[in-house]
Image (cartoon, rainbow, N blue to C red; front, side, top):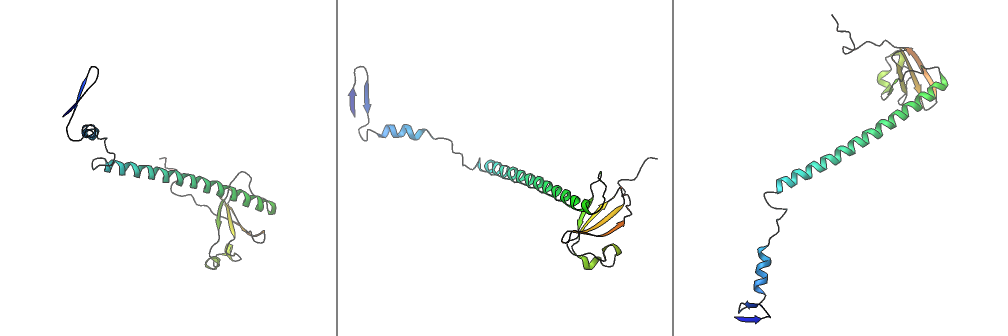
Length: 157
């Protein structure tokens, strides 16, 4: 062994490799590994929660945009129909699009209907309007019988 003398201290290094002792001290310190068998399930669950939260926020954002777009389209449709016929101003109609006009030809309201026509149903006024956006004209106006659903019936005894 070699000894090195300093002014007040004496350092003794092993005879073999002088840097071996410092390597040993560094190897004693092992940082905790984040990816080990104990932590892996928690990391997977955390990652799944983050992905699900992200996708949920994306879904809510898309739903909001779709609803806003749908409301804007209904308002635009009502404005176009309002130029052609008097419609109730205080009621927002239920709007449907005719998809298979040939299947609806048996009903008198839909005899002149084409695919893509819009049906506006005003339930309080009990009126339905068949509107053709391609030619900007009213095809048919008819009364509607609106029957209350079981949810709207009075259950008081």
